Image (cartoon, rainbow, N blue to C red; front, side):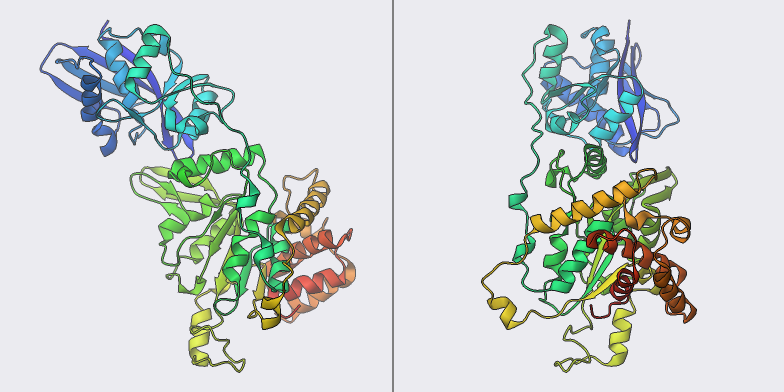
Amino acid sequence: MTLGITQSVALLGLDGSVVTVEVDISDGIPMYSLLGLPDAALNESRDRVRAALINTNEIWPNRKVTVSLSPAWLPKSGSSFDLSIALAILIAQQALPQEPLNGLLVLGELALDGKIRSVRGVLPALIAAYKSGITRAFVPQENFAEASLMTQMQIIGFSSLNQVLRFLRTGERDISPQLDLAIDSPDLLPDFSDVAGQAAARFAAEVAASGGHHLLLIGPPGAGKTMIAARIPTILPPLTIEQALEVTAVHSIAGTLGTRSPMSLIAPIVAPHHSATRVAMVGGGSASIKPGACSLAHHGVLFIDEAPECANGVLDALRQPLEAGTVTIARSVGSLTFPAQFLLVLAANPCPCGKFAGRGRSCTCSSVQVRRYLGKLSGPLMDRIDMRVQVEPVSRLEMSQIELGEPSAKIAARVVSARATAKQRFSDKPWNLNSQIPSRELRTTFKPERSAMNFLHDELDKERLTARGLHKIIRLAWTLADLNGHVIPDLGDVQRAHQLREGSEL
């Protein structure tokens, strides 16, 4: 028999399809044909596989080699098929038995010396294989920790082609290290106790974490906007195992797991530079579509500093993900949807020079410059922001205080309590956060007190609120009610939510 068969996975976003790798070796002019819509990286597998086999003291067939990746209509990309192709070639040469590789998934890129290098998207690939009935897999040793999150499958990690061949021929293999399920230590993370003063901004961060509300911090340079935003993940509840798997899968596709533990239960924070492009922010690409910053911040925080400095259209591209919680990218190779449920935190100066325009400081900006600067934050985007908070400069008295501010642990306890209250209220609903309450439910089941609704209707009649703004305030009022221990938002909760949304003094 001159036919070898192995199995791998082709990924299109987070969705994967099992690919059957078939290799036929026949008489004829020595050549290598790769069929099945491969991309450039996959076409180059011939030279990598050939060098790896030769440097592992195996024989490269000096005959006609045909490699077919089926289904043939499905585009394939990347170098994760290298190991699968190499093993199929050896089976076709009868250098390996076929039976041990039946029903087994093979992933890995080959180096020229036969070492197996890590690949992207291992966790989504294993999930797709498991759904297709595959329960065993060979993966690169560098991806073993990520792959071991699929506890329903038998995962074996290898660091070289030699180790794979020895295992298939003799059953011997090196013992892979066990997955460390320890949660990242929060002691190494920044703490809110480091922030001096800023009571209003700290409270707004607590409200944002409790209900999943989006936040805009406006203040001069050095006031602490970035410090506060960087500490919001420390007061968010730990991720559940399902959420951690989703986050790991997205980061695996993007190839950014080097900066994050695969089993981390701490909410991610992504802070792209204000010069980031629209594709970097929401995802995209031509041949290979990758998730953007808003998907990498899934179940976490997307922080954009110096927001008015972003290029035209970059921030507005976030409008659809903010509403839908997903990003759909359409390209010629297909349409992909990535998850994007994130908490957006924007930071901005009050004017181009940042010296408090109109407050008696040494501001050199004209009123036209100030309007043009803040006007870069478009009205439709700002309408989707729940809270606008003025961050005042830290006073000398606040800086000289010896006592530290309230630590993240105490704030996180209140956040967890408020979220538990909301979760109990929504026990029979498909959502868990106040920010996710549908508009229809806000007008029927989850209405505030009558006096509070009268206040909002007055603001709506005076055209000080949009319909979206009214719904945003009600959602925010529910979070304030949870933090204050109220069963239903009263007039005080709604008025404070209105103040937070409009950016007036608390």
